[in-house]
Amino acid sequence: MARGNKNEPEDDYSAKLDMCLTDGIVKTGSGVLIGALTSVLFFRRRRWPIIAGMGMGIGLAYANCEFELNSKKKNAA
Image (tube, rainbow, N blue to C red; front, side, top):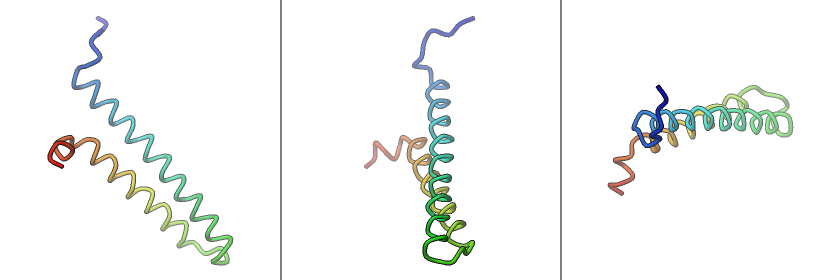
């Protein structure tokens, strides 16, 4: 049976999770790329800038996802 109503809570939650996953992949990849570039240009190919960039990307994606999924915080602010 086809579901024609796109305003169902499951569809909204699924769309938010898809957005979180995509955001996480993009931000983590960007962090790794920026960390690798920083490592090559400034730190003579050390590993820690890459790990730090990846951590920042994951942290930003997590914070955005938490804010998007917890709509109560949006309404309270």
